[in-house]
Image (cartoon, helix red, strand yellow):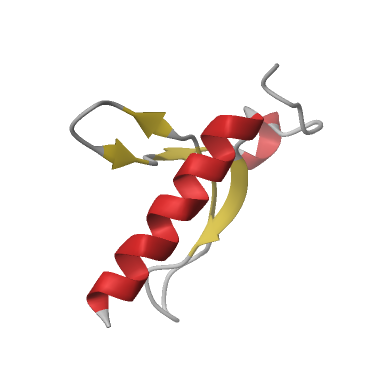
Length: 68
């Protein structure tokens, strides 16, 4: 089960990297906490692939941009 998730995440990271895009996400820790808006940016090196979560302040969101 974990290997399937690893393959899916790797495919998502590679697709974002190849299309030079990011994903806007909503992150919720639990039902008792407020949701946070964020952005996942692909980061690929020869030894690993990651997509770190970057928090976005709701007051600063005006539009979406393509990272070209």
